[in-house]
Amino acid sequence: MTTSGEHRPIEAAIFDWGGTLAEYATIELEDMWRLAARHLVREQGNGSRREENELVSRLAQVEADFWATTSTHQRAGTLAELLQAATAALALDVTEAVLEEAATHYLDAWTPHIRHEPDAADTLRALRRRGLRIGLLSNTHWPRAFHEHFLARDGLDGLIDARVYSSELHVMKPHPEAFRAALDAVGVADAGRAVFIGDRPFDDVFGAHRSGLRTVLRRNPEVPPYDVVPDATIERLFDLVEVVDRWREASPDIASGVTETRGPR
Image (cartoon, rainbow, N blue to C red; front, side, top):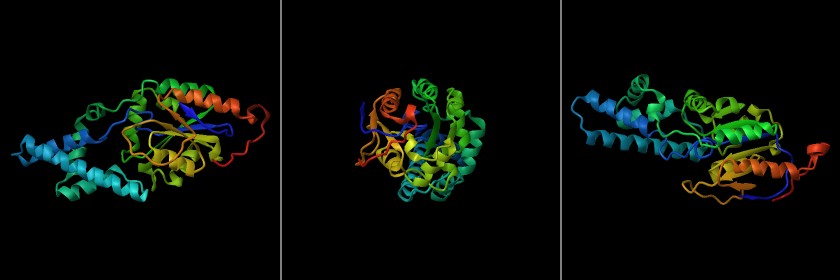
């Protein structure tokens, strides 16, 4: 764990979701594509497992292309838009297939690889005991209900004061408006009094730093690198508590109310 710099005392901690609070999943919608492909093959009446696998591959490629477009333009995308893109690319009604399969499969069976970090709840509780408001900001095309299901299932919903999903915005990280939406959601006007915790150097660290937040990078070798220096780097999620404690001890206005000036980095 590494830290740098002295800062104003923080009022809120805002987390990324996948790769930070939740275990990193390489292909988030692989299970959905599998169910959709199976449904489409079954409808055609003479499909094989090979054809099903080919459809899954094509759908996964549509998803990758969709993410590349939204990331390049920092424009948020929704699940509905992704399904429309898949329907157009395959000339098959992927939206109807997904909706029908979703109606007959419980969400945990649909996405069995979605699991939150074992120390997520303890980390959030420790930060709340220190008086911090807790937020979440996720780049996602999933609707809110999907995320809320998993947060509730693992007992995290009551520990996060505000959740912001790019599927409900017109922008996504690293766009400054995405971070401003998260700050507004946790009621923090001064971005320098909030910390953003994420595993992506570009989306999370660069985006948050450019928006005035201080930053904590949770190491993840699976994501692309970017030339940016976070205020702190952690290996385990609970290491964040020690970072916050050090910042609290180094902030002279915790007791006196005097605001510290943030210098150049």
